[in-house]
Image (cartoon, rainbow, N blue to C red):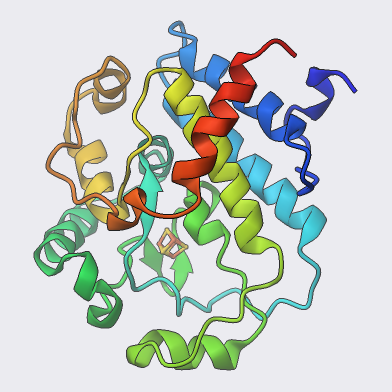
Length: 246
Ligand code: SF4
Protein backbone atom coordinates (compact mmCIF):
# COMPACT_ATOMS: atom_id res chain seq x y z
CA UNK A 1 0.00 0.00 0.00
CA UNK A 2 1.15 3.54 -0.64
CA UNK A 3 1.49 6.06 2.15
CA UNK A 4 -1.40 8.02 0.66
CA UNK A 5 -3.73 5.05 1.04
CA UNK A 6 -3.49 5.24 4.86
CA UNK A 7 -4.28 8.96 5.16
CA UNK A 8 -7.54 9.72 6.95
CA UNK A 9 -8.70 6.08 6.90
CA UNK A 10 -9.78 4.21 10.06
CA UNK A 11 -6.74 2.84 11.88
CA UNK A 12 -6.53 -0.95 11.78
CA UNK A 13 -5.38 -1.12 15.44
CA UNK A 14 -2.83 -3.81 14.66
CA UNK A 15 0.86 -3.98 15.52
CA UNK A 16 1.93 -2.52 12.18
CA UNK A 17 2.30 1.25 12.66
CA UNK A 18 2.38 2.27 8.99
CA UNK A 19 -1.07 3.87 9.15
CA UNK A 20 -0.14 5.80 12.30
CA UNK A 21 3.15 6.85 10.69
CA UNK A 22 1.48 8.07 7.49
CA UNK A 23 -1.16 10.01 9.40
CA UNK A 24 1.40 11.59 11.74
CA UNK A 25 3.46 12.74 8.78
CA UNK A 26 0.40 14.09 6.98
CA UNK A 27 -0.80 15.90 10.08
CA UNK A 28 2.62 17.43 10.68
CA UNK A 29 2.47 18.87 7.15
CA UNK A 30 -0.91 20.44 7.90
CA UNK A 31 0.61 22.02 11.01
CA UNK A 32 3.68 23.21 9.14
CA UNK A 33 1.74 24.98 6.39
CA UNK A 34 2.27 28.58 7.46
CA UNK A 35 -0.10 29.84 4.76
CA UNK A 36 -3.04 28.48 6.82
CA UNK A 37 -3.73 30.74 9.83
CA UNK A 38 -6.15 28.22 11.44
CA UNK A 39 -3.95 25.17 10.94
CA UNK A 40 -4.05 24.23 14.63
CA UNK A 41 -7.85 24.01 14.52
CA UNK A 42 -7.59 22.13 11.21
CA UNK A 43 -5.20 19.61 12.79
CA UNK A 44 -7.63 19.03 15.65
CA UNK A 45 -10.45 18.44 13.20
CA UNK A 46 -8.30 15.93 11.33
CA UNK A 47 -7.57 14.05 14.58
CA UNK A 48 -11.23 14.13 15.61
CA UNK A 49 -12.39 12.79 12.25
CA UNK A 50 -9.75 10.06 12.37
CA UNK A 51 -10.89 9.00 15.83
CA UNK A 52 -14.57 9.03 14.85
CA UNK A 53 -13.85 6.82 11.82
CA UNK A 54 -11.69 4.45 13.86
CA UNK A 55 -14.31 4.16 16.60
CA UNK A 56 -17.00 3.49 14.00
CA UNK A 57 -14.89 0.73 12.48
CA UNK A 58 -13.82 -0.99 15.67
CA UNK A 59 -16.24 -0.35 18.52
CA UNK A 60 -19.05 -2.85 18.32
CA UNK A 61 -22.29 -2.15 20.15
CA UNK A 62 -24.29 -2.08 22.19
CA UNK A 63 -23.25 1.25 23.73
CA UNK A 64 -25.34 2.69 26.57
CA UNK A 65 -24.57 6.34 25.75
CA UNK A 66 -27.65 8.24 24.56
CA UNK A 67 -28.63 11.78 23.69
CA UNK A 68 -29.30 13.76 26.87
CA UNK A 69 -27.05 11.69 29.12
CA UNK A 70 -24.23 13.90 30.42
CA UNK A 71 -22.99 12.03 33.47
CA UNK A 72 -19.41 12.33 32.19
CA UNK A 73 -19.62 16.12 31.58
CA UNK A 74 -18.92 17.33 35.14
CA UNK A 75 -15.28 16.52 35.69
CA UNK A 76 -11.74 17.44 34.59
CA UNK A 77 -11.46 17.26 30.80
CA UNK A 78 -8.01 17.25 29.26
CA UNK A 79 -7.38 18.58 25.75
CA UNK A 80 -4.50 19.59 23.53
CA UNK A 81 -4.22 23.24 22.48
CA UNK A 82 -5.33 22.62 18.85
CA UNK A 83 -8.46 20.97 20.25
CA UNK A 84 -9.09 24.01 22.45
CA UNK A 85 -8.93 26.27 19.40
CA UNK A 86 -11.32 24.07 17.46
CA UNK A 87 -13.83 23.92 20.31
CA UNK A 88 -13.59 27.70 20.89
CA UNK A 89 -14.93 28.23 17.37
CA UNK A 90 -18.22 26.68 18.51
CA UNK A 91 -18.73 28.76 21.65
CA UNK A 92 -21.60 31.23 21.27
CA UNK A 93 -21.66 32.66 24.81
CA UNK A 94 -18.30 33.42 26.43
CA UNK A 95 -19.57 34.53 29.88
CA UNK A 96 -20.43 31.03 31.25
CA UNK A 97 -17.03 29.76 30.09
CA UNK A 98 -15.19 32.49 32.00
CA UNK A 99 -17.22 31.86 35.16
CA UNK A 100 -16.65 28.10 35.00
CA UNK A 101 -12.94 28.62 34.25
CA UNK A 102 -12.49 30.62 37.46
CA UNK A 103 -14.31 27.90 39.39
CA UNK A 104 -12.23 25.12 37.80
CA UNK A 105 -9.00 26.94 38.49
CA UNK A 106 -9.87 27.44 42.16
CA UNK A 107 -10.65 23.75 42.62
CA UNK A 108 -7.73 22.17 40.76
CA UNK A 109 -7.44 18.82 39.01
CA UNK A 110 -7.13 16.64 42.11
CA UNK A 111 -10.55 17.65 43.44
CA UNK A 112 -12.41 18.08 40.17
CA UNK A 113 -13.82 14.59 40.05
CA UNK A 114 -15.78 14.94 43.28
CA UNK A 115 -16.43 18.71 42.98
CA UNK A 116 -18.59 18.09 39.90
CA UNK A 117 -18.15 21.40 38.06
CA UNK A 118 -20.54 21.18 35.11
CA UNK A 119 -19.07 21.75 31.68
CA UNK A 120 -20.24 25.22 30.62
CA UNK A 121 -20.86 23.92 27.11
CA UNK A 122 -23.85 21.94 28.31
CA UNK A 123 -27.10 23.42 27.03
CA UNK A 124 -30.33 21.80 28.20
CA UNK A 125 -28.35 18.68 28.95
CA UNK A 126 -26.75 18.48 25.50
CA UNK A 127 -23.19 19.28 24.45
CA UNK A 128 -23.20 22.70 22.79
CA UNK A 129 -19.85 21.95 21.14
CA UNK A 130 -20.58 18.40 20.05
CA UNK A 131 -18.88 18.52 16.64
CA UNK A 132 -15.71 20.02 18.10
CA UNK A 133 -15.57 18.22 21.45
CA UNK A 134 -12.10 16.92 22.29
CA UNK A 135 -10.76 13.39 21.91
CA UNK A 136 -11.37 12.72 25.61
CA UNK A 137 -15.11 13.39 25.24
CA UNK A 138 -15.39 11.52 21.94
CA UNK A 139 -13.98 8.41 23.62
CA UNK A 140 -16.48 8.30 26.48
CA UNK A 141 -18.39 5.30 25.19
CA UNK A 142 -19.87 3.18 27.93
CA UNK A 143 -21.50 -0.21 27.82
CA UNK A 144 -23.28 0.29 31.13
CA UNK A 145 -25.44 3.19 32.34
CA UNK A 146 -25.44 1.57 35.79
CA UNK A 147 -21.65 1.67 35.91
CA UNK A 148 -21.62 5.36 34.89
CA UNK A 149 -24.30 6.22 37.43
CA UNK A 150 -22.30 4.63 40.22
CA UNK A 151 -18.99 6.03 39.06
CA UNK A 152 -19.66 9.67 38.18
CA UNK A 153 -22.09 11.52 40.42
CA UNK A 154 -21.19 10.02 43.76
CA UNK A 155 -17.56 9.40 44.52
CA UNK A 156 -16.08 7.15 41.91
CA UNK A 157 -17.27 3.82 43.23
CA UNK A 158 -16.74 0.94 40.85
CA UNK A 159 -15.26 1.46 37.41
CA UNK A 160 -16.42 2.65 34.03
CA UNK A 161 -17.36 -0.04 31.56
CA UNK A 162 -15.73 1.36 28.41
CA UNK A 163 -16.74 -0.09 25.07
CA UNK A 164 -13.88 -2.36 23.99
CA UNK A 165 -11.44 -0.65 21.67
CA UNK A 166 -12.50 2.92 22.50
CA UNK A 167 -9.59 3.84 24.72
CA UNK A 168 -7.05 2.14 22.48
CA UNK A 169 -8.37 4.09 19.49
CA UNK A 170 -8.01 7.33 21.42
CA UNK A 171 -4.48 6.41 22.47
CA UNK A 172 -3.45 5.83 18.87
CA UNK A 173 -4.97 9.07 17.61
CA UNK A 174 -3.44 11.00 20.52
CA UNK A 175 -0.09 9.47 19.62
CA UNK A 176 -0.50 10.64 16.01
CA UNK A 177 -1.52 14.16 17.04
CA UNK A 178 1.28 14.54 19.58
CA UNK A 179 3.91 13.20 17.18
CA UNK A 180 2.69 15.60 14.48
CA UNK A 181 2.81 18.55 16.88
CA UNK A 182 6.35 17.66 17.92
CA UNK A 183 7.44 17.24 14.29
CA UNK A 184 6.04 20.72 13.57
CA UNK A 185 7.89 22.16 16.57
CA UNK A 186 4.73 22.76 18.60
CA UNK A 187 4.01 21.69 22.21
CA UNK A 188 1.76 18.69 22.85
CA UNK A 189 0.73 19.84 26.29
CA UNK A 190 -2.71 18.87 27.57
CA UNK A 191 -4.54 21.58 29.50
CA UNK A 192 -7.75 21.71 31.49
CA UNK A 193 -10.36 22.32 28.82
CA UNK A 194 -12.48 25.07 30.41
CA UNK A 195 -9.52 27.22 31.47
CA UNK A 196 -7.99 26.69 28.04
CA UNK A 197 -11.22 27.80 26.36
CA UNK A 198 -11.29 30.96 28.47
CA UNK A 199 -7.83 31.89 27.18
CA UNK A 200 -8.63 31.02 23.56
CA UNK A 201 -11.77 33.18 23.74
CA UNK A 202 -10.26 36.22 25.43
CA UNK A 203 -6.65 36.48 24.23
CA UNK A 204 -6.56 38.44 20.97
CA UNK A 205 -5.32 36.44 17.99
CA UNK A 206 -4.53 33.51 20.28
CA UNK A 207 -4.16 30.81 17.61
CA UNK A 208 -1.74 32.79 15.46
CA UNK A 209 0.34 33.77 18.51
CA UNK A 210 0.48 30.17 19.79
CA UNK A 211 1.50 28.91 16.36
CA UNK A 212 4.26 31.53 16.38
CA UNK A 213 5.65 30.10 19.60
CA UNK A 214 4.10 32.40 22.19
CA UNK A 215 3.10 30.60 25.39
CA UNK A 216 -0.42 32.02 25.36
CA UNK A 217 -1.66 29.30 27.75
CA UNK A 218 1.08 29.76 30.36
CA UNK A 219 -1.37 30.42 33.19
CA UNK A 220 -3.64 27.46 32.45
CA UNK A 221 -3.60 24.32 34.56
CA UNK A 222 -1.87 21.45 32.75
CA UNK A 223 -3.06 17.86 32.96
CA UNK A 224 -0.91 16.18 35.59
CA UNK A 225 -1.20 12.95 33.61
CA UNK A 226 1.01 14.30 30.82
CA UNK A 227 4.18 13.06 32.45
CA UNK A 228 2.93 9.49 32.78
CA UNK A 229 1.56 6.77 30.61
CA UNK A 230 2.28 5.08 27.33
CA UNK A 231 2.26 8.22 25.19
CA UNK A 232 5.58 9.39 26.64
CA UNK A 233 7.07 6.15 25.27
CA UNK A 234 5.24 5.86 21.97
CA UNK A 235 5.28 9.42 20.66
CA UNK A 236 9.10 9.52 20.18
CA UNK A 237 8.91 6.13 18.44
CA UNK A 238 6.25 7.36 16.03
CA UNK A 239 8.20 10.58 15.42
CA UNK A 240 11.25 8.54 14.51
CA UNK A 241 9.24 6.38 12.09
CA UNK A 242 7.63 9.45 10.49
CA UNK A 243 11.02 11.08 9.93
CA UNK A 244 12.33 8.10 7.96
CA UNK A 245 11.74 7.72 4.24
CA UNK A 246 8.66 5.65 3.45
S1 SF4 B 1 -17.31 19.41 25.71
FE1 SF4 B 1 -19.35 18.50 25.47
S2 SF4 B 1 -19.03 16.28 25.73
FE2 SF4 B 1 -17.19 17.32 26.57
S3 SF4 B 1 -17.59 17.61 28.78
FE3 SF4 B 1 -18.32 19.48 27.71
S4 SF4 B 1 -20.53 19.13 27.30
FE4 SF4 B 1 -19.58 17.13 27.76
